[in-house]
Length: 284
Image (cartoon, rainbow, N blue to C red; front, side, top):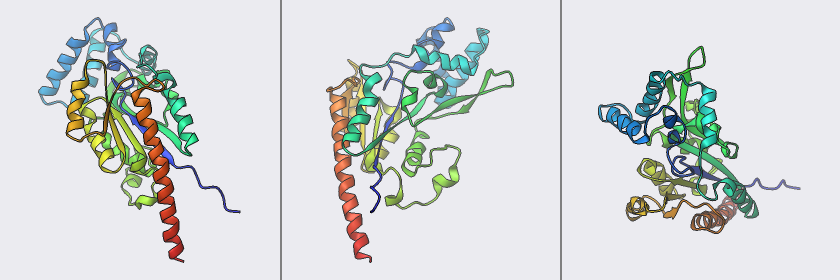
């Protein structure tokens, strides 16, 4: 008796700051703990960027600089502990179990991924960290005494796209470039682009949004109350398929959109499977 066909996989990929949580993660505890304002921190970071430093490296460098100046050296466990203070948008906490269950009802396995320019250490300390198959985000290097001393991994808006291909090909170890660049036929890749959904909040997510959308998946730009105009241009310019408020609660617009996308994935997978079976039959 033939074995049952393996369930197809749906990949939901998220930015983190202002997509799942309400503001930049550094603003919950880290910046206030140094006795400075968030606006002053980001303005100084922007000044470094305008002077020629990569925008992500600028904020990472500034975090270390400010911590040293305040004589508050940051260890990895200190960063992780900051994750406990993150505040999420409505519905986020039960979103993952709810979407997983819906996907299972449609015959799909749902996997969740973070692709963020925020800090992996802080995300690891958050209450939703265990919901993700992988977290791709910035990381610090730590010296012999365990103190953060240098950026180890920097994820900017263009380097984010490599992780889409890693997920597509099943090469999840970000140090494995050889397997990532190896040719794999489209129908042999674990997660086709048509089974991908990317959710982000703005321009830094555009390369990922466009790549997923152009290859048959879906992209959604989410917005907070009063900030709809910020993402409307993305929709009008066809960089995303949809825009939706940052409310992940059951029955809300975002919940409905993603569930309909999962419905489509299930139908498309069935049709592709039937097509491949017919092609295989003719090849005998």
